[in-house]
View 1 (cartoon, rainbow, N blue to C red):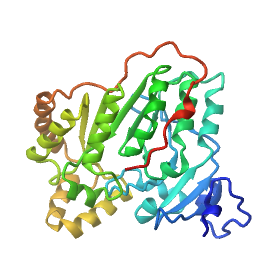
View 2 (tube, helix red, strand yellow):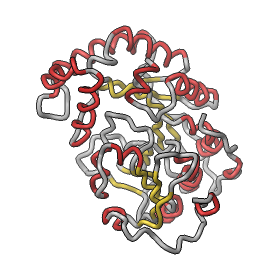
View 3 (cartoon, one colour):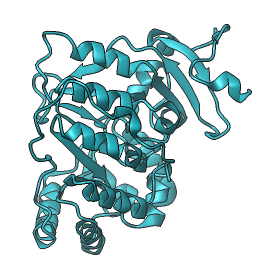
View 4 (tube, rainbow, N blue to C red):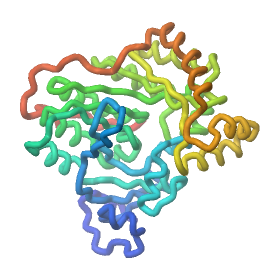
Length: 345
């Protein structure tokens, strides 16, 4: 396949008639494979909506989210979003990592939704399901349009990511923060590079993410870090947690959130198959710890809290990630197109 046929504005005259029904329902335009992302298929779709409203019973501090992708090249073994790929008639294992659905029109759809009179400018979260700064963002550049639309509409927003590509958009995010509250968080749960590559094979290294934290704070933002999930018997030792929180504090983070891994739906089988292959001695302990449910026992949760709390206090990481109040917003995000096009690494 020649590169000219892979550009986003290329005309696709013969769509794959063999597309899975789930993808067809999702608004599939075409499926693309590119030389720089070997083994990955991008399924470009036209979405009908961008804002997702959470159920009323949700306890999260926001009610709306935006997801630019379905599936994630990070390939984290424990990802709780894996079962969502089954709605597309794709599997929650390898397909989730390699069959990535791209909402190519998501920024335009979001802008229309934010312009509605009924929109109350409630906070919007990005990165709660799949990562908006996974490597695919380097090709599709969806986030600049989303950030601009949110800021110009007066909508506060937060971003959670493992992806160092966020650095590309720091100038734009700085402009946005002058109009609306912007919260930036980095996910970093594994400090051991070898273990990190085994469990999160598509993610930037721990060192690269520590550099991202520094870049965020150097740009004037507070940076919260998700030290989650803690993986029982692999990343819950006092030595690992102490070293990780020390490094996070040294990088300039203002706070951390720590909680244990949960194994929902088909994610459970995917992770336990990996565990059986690489750490078979832990399988019995996991069966005892998780039983037949998705969550660890209350006893383990209490034990982890008691282990982590002194370390959080020790390194001064009890703060939050909310940026200070912005200046009065202007309607147009001046300079929005000026963000430099940096590469992922």
